[in-house]
Length: 214
Image (cartoon, rainbow, N blue to C red; front, side):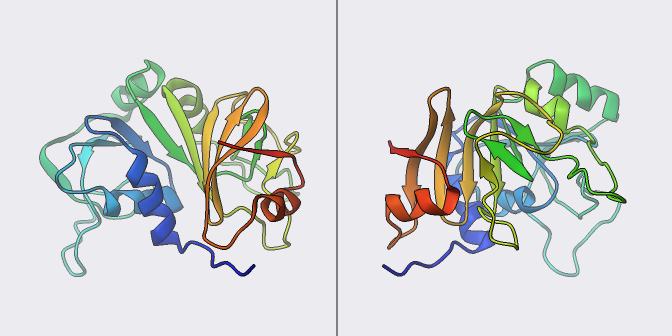
């Protein structure tokens, strides 16, 4: 059967759909920052940025950017009423102290049991950039990953065992991809949903691992 991948905005909307009322959430650099644009205005969610912001809103309208108010990826953001900014040491204390309900991160690889590799590919000349990823991965109550399922070479980023340096062990609970949403469990990967037209056997063949339906 034929299927269409989720666009980056559709994927961000899928992640936002699962964020509950009242959650405090860190959005990592890259694709996860798009999630801020898809949280319903009627739902109270406190968005955290590791450079020292709590209460971020969606991206500003074109021409309304304030480059003194940016997220950890140096993108201009907005601040909702009641929002605050503070020293990054206080921000890391929030991350390490278990005060975040969810963090949404990008990844190079995620293992079937939830190991995360998202800071270095090990390639010669690649610039290691772990940032606050380790603190977020183990400090948040839940770690979700948002990424394309396949590399540009067509290889699955969901693997049996990560070959890249690890960021955290067994920390990822869910993986949101352009083709499917999966849960990482001690027993392996469980499929929560797939794009229309994609079959479980086809997804399993793309990933190269056995999958269970939720």
